[in-house]
Image: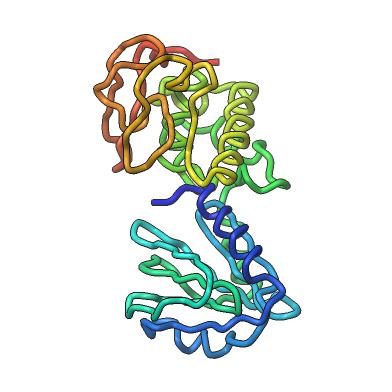
Length: 275
């Protein structure tokens, strides 16, 4: 499932290509046809992301939104016109004189009101990529919880937008055992995690990929082979079990937690530490 940086990048890309321009809206697959007929010919007025949710706002008052959640199988294709003939798997196509975007396989693609959009925001946790969001709301829940910090970081009601890669990598970068209960983290340590997520995810939006290793740990700096993985990007532990840790040589471990694979280095992230 795409992580939050991908959704914010999609919001940015749609704004650059479609905002302020009259847009043709169609649903070649047919599942969004009625809503598309209401929107086609209007201007895309605003794009927004919160966690893994994308919102495309239409109309002068921006009170009508397309709400998109890619889920596990959703994918976007963006390109320049002329657009190729759409396949019957395209749920939503936006097009203007210069660009098009095709959405396939989303979990959610629905027309919603501004009030319905606000209800979605209210059930989500703060997002490190939203400038007005702060870590205090997330820490208020984490500090009262016996749930592991690894599970809490993936709970979209606690923090929105963090997925399996950022979860594994930020815990490694701060030397935190993923099984540490949330209540054992001090506010200062959690704020450091949050600030790191802000920087890492902003980098992810700019590069459109996840890179989490510090400059001194890049393949060039360490004279090691670059990572070869479909997900791309240089990482410390994600999907690296049982390869040796870049820092200490201990085999990276993996285990299932809340139906997702967890990755960590038991030496760099020792159990029993808190603070």
